Image (cartoon, rainbow, N blue to C red):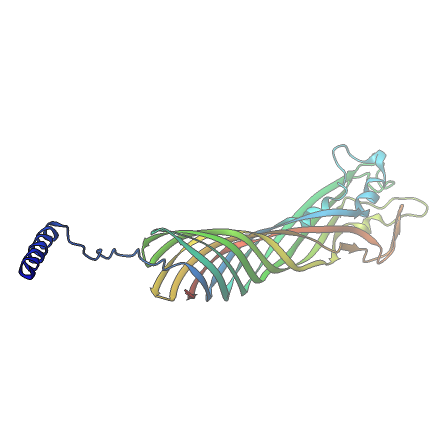
Amino acid sequence: MFVFRGGAFACLLAAFSAEAADLPSLKAPIAQASPPPALWTGFYAGLNAGYGWGSNAANTAGSPLLDGIAFAANGLDPARQLPGTGLIPGVTALANSGVANIDQSGFIGGGQIGYNYQWGAHVVVGLEADFQGTTMQGNGAYAGVSRDSIAWKDPAVPGLLPCSTNGCNLNRLGVGGGQIGASTDWLGTVRGRIGYLATPDWLIYGTGGLAYGGVRASAAHSALTIGTLTGANDAALPVPFPYSQLNGTYFLPSAPGAAGYSGTRAGWTVGGGVEWLFAPQWSLKVEGLYYNLGSVSLRSSPVSLLSPLTINLGGVNVAAGQLLVANAPVTRITFDGALVRLGVNYRFNFW
């Protein structure tokens, strides 16, 4: 009985082994390669240094406030004034009008912070803010000229009327100019960035956003009026007027005018660059930006011409030191330019 049961068990074991040999074998799954890590994702901070340029046209326009010379000359003897002549009120303001080219340049240097997110194998987007001091400054000059004239002709009674012989002519020439200066003391930006990974280590990107900075500007203006009188002759009256003594050329300098500005301006910037991830947590970049901080208008104190002498002659009554001409120049300066800088970043890969 025992022998039978043992034989039956052996047969059952052999049959189970044969069936098990026909079943598929169970093996450990093959390990799949994980995707490459997003090397550019994370926060970073760094330093930058470079150079900036700005070529700005500062436009100055003289605004007339007073022209006592034109008022007096045009009202002196309207009946004897020749047609087509006459002083133009306010024309001397053209002597304080012109364009000064201000070529700003200087070094820049500061730091930046930002965050990148690598999207897939080739796209990197991010946000960066930077702040740097600058030595960018420049100066320029302008010159202006104005001209007008008036003429009179008295009846042909030689020796009796002051303008009867050849007629009297008064020519007025205004010559002016100014010095304009501008500087950018510091500059900051907040910009978005989007780039393409040419290789896992090389990023080509474009950038743009807000720009802001501290700027200064100054303007100084001066002018000279040159008056030339010809043709006046003495009048043979009981009390003769020495009109002929007025013939000649007169140089009338003006008291200068000036204006200044200092403040913070905001605008925009756009540019691009290349960044190289040369170590797991370090990168170098070369970047170029154009920035525009808008413009300011400098309203100068008046450029004033005062009478150098007292004249009481033939209806002309002028006291020494009396204000004759006043112009108020206004200068408009735009603060913009381009900068190129080299930067280094350290990446905080917390994860």
